[in-house]
Length: 251
Image (cartoon, rainbow, N blue to C red):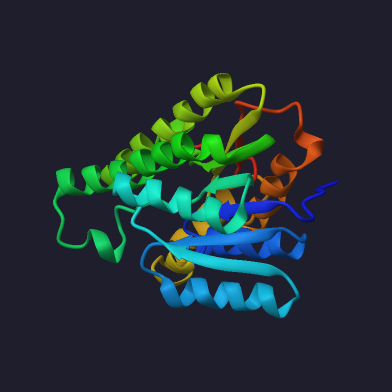
């Protein structure tokens, strides 16, 4: 179904979390994977080594995509490494709760998230277009809470940034058609380091019980959807937002 063999793929934020799973997943399918990282150099290099150890092709590039010049440079360097690009996945994003956000006030956190999630994604989408192979695709990573709403400052910030990514996806799907498809995956509760190590067992269980499928999502759940969207099986799908959340409806 996937037919990813031999495709040139770039994944931003590919050193950890969902990005790491995406890189390994596309590598397993025979794609040539270029992993972007911001600060996670060793993690990105480890992903490259894992793909290469399995007989795949992979490399890594560093850039701060909150800086438009660096984001533009990333695209150009990716094109030099790969030639024409088949698939570009905008996975990199900022978190209001990350270590990098420590010490920032509300406005500074908002500005940081908008620079990374929105400006960075927009710049990469804009700059990569001339380097993409016909019938290529762009996949953005959004958030299901941006569709339904969620209370709290952290959720407000995340929903604003990912809501903009969702709107951008729809706009670019129209603008880039018919040559390039643009879709967005909107994950729900995905089990990650934060979920495992920084939440209480009561919170973890409460979230689990609120999900119709009665489990937290895994990064691999996102990989399967991304492989589908990047494949010929999704050739007539563009401008769509696909929640991957176990059927959750947030209130």
